[in-house]
Length: 158
Length: 263
Figure (tube, rainbow over the protein chains, first blue to last red):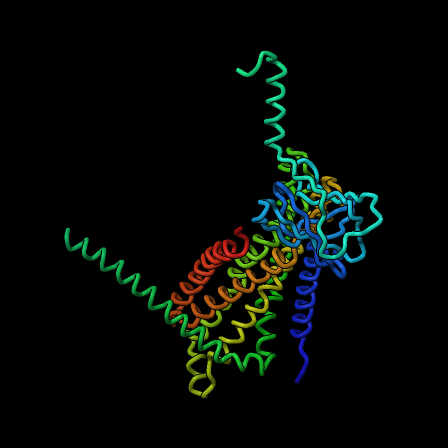
């Protein structure tokens, strides 16, 4: 079989095509970012998760330490049961405080972990007991407006 | 009066019947192409030659178009996002719109007009000059020898071209957004990487481009093979290829998007 000039062009074409795909995967997509290493699971219950979604990051001091695996409604307590997939390198004390935060004013929501001082760590599969729900902007605004209305009219509601 | 109304409905019926008939014929033709594909891979040189004509020769138009589409996205996106003070989301906007939609769709449309029409014209002309009949006479199956390599050349080229289009588009958005206008480079790439998911966005985009590649190649080889064996027939077949495959791309894109990204 004779090699032709067409072969080299097709070879170049395939190489840069696959290169573009690799560029998309590594530079544009999140395939290159650090995967969660030897993961373990934690659970946390929230009264209200707001706009939290599965695959959202779990951060501590701003560092991504895990991802949200799934979110279901716990029918016993009617709370949201969030399963976190944590990076095996990071462990947290038992009195860690989990809050749902928003990055920026309209950014995506994530779970922030604030470690306490307990010497014991939460074991794999454990539950984070202390949680704070998402701040729902509408509630906040209505509360604020309610308070201002009360402040302006001390005699009571209209 | 009644006659002309009757004639009107007869025409509609004939058009619908003809459409369904052609669809069935096209499906049978696709099956024949797939069954006759052995030759395309046993004699890989045939397919490589078609990848050259469909893919390599489309490189320039795809890369330049991708660059410009990305640059326009960068400009327009920056203009709108800056109004809401979220310029740093520019990378996300450019990357997601390219990888999910514009890459596969625009690359597919360009591919249909650049390569699909050429395939149709080539096969149609071979039919008009009775080359296909001559092959048949020599016991060479024209579907396996002529049609299948062109089909596979298109199917293989299309995803690579779409990926190139998206990659060039992201570079174009970077050039305009970061280098020209001066958005922050770190947040451009960082937010993009945080928001673009490999499976959900990139892989789905690749699946789309493969589907479009099959659709365009199928339409192109079928229209060529089915064309009337005259100069006028070939020109009509070429037009039909571009129209049908463009509509097929846009229709399929809606179906695929609603399957992939709903909910």
